Length: 361
Image (cartoon, rainbow, N blue to C red):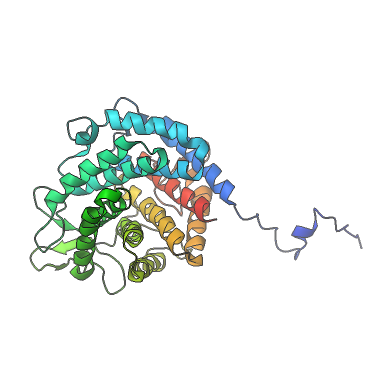
């Protein structure tokens, strides 16, 4: 019999001969490194300095601003590079036909909400007042959509729909501003509390603790629409900020119920988040899962939960192993793979999950 010396290098793999040695678990640094790699790709491949947008995508680019801010929050060495994107986009992106804050006001209240949250995130990193002012101005326009049919906020200025996402964004922006403008805290807090009071009683949160797409304007009841992952996400960040502004244990408890329902109900057999309704998400749907991951990170910070950590790590691992084209660094829309058709939306959505895994690991 040949004897094998049990050296220190050998001991970690001293297991049954029929098994292979498992790879070490990824660390926070690993996830951050992966996120930075993927961020270089999204910026180099899709950012257009002349428009301030990624791949010409409008509301998605507001999300990417928030993503870059989250990276800088986690790694301060990225602050200088991300700040250049913030400044250029504020100056050059003008979907509403103007410049500065006016450029981020259009016909869709949810578009406005994405940009407001992006500029608040940029303000948090830079402490530069122009970003906070942009969010203030955008929110002022959002308030003109209040008192929709059945209550809450309209989705669009033509008053054609009352959606969960527009109302969730309105709540989140109001609560964020309440925590950042002490002299007007009561004004923004009143808006946030009014929105939450309506939302919580509207029936949008169904009996499974999932949020459907919107309200049926003919009945003023839950329309039973798709439980998109971003609808399960934005609400988490909104309730975290509302709890900061006006502590109430019910806010985090409800947020935890919604997050847990998504983790159990919107994942595949391996726990990987899957967008309902489409196997091949377009540039709209490809953004959604990252929104959930980003806001779950915020909820975990406020109400730590081991299940959230396991979920975020598993999804980040799957993204890197199964949904990434290694030669190009592109990441597709299906986190369980296989890789196909990366866009700025799918890339930045994956970055949100990688950053979240780094933050909670």
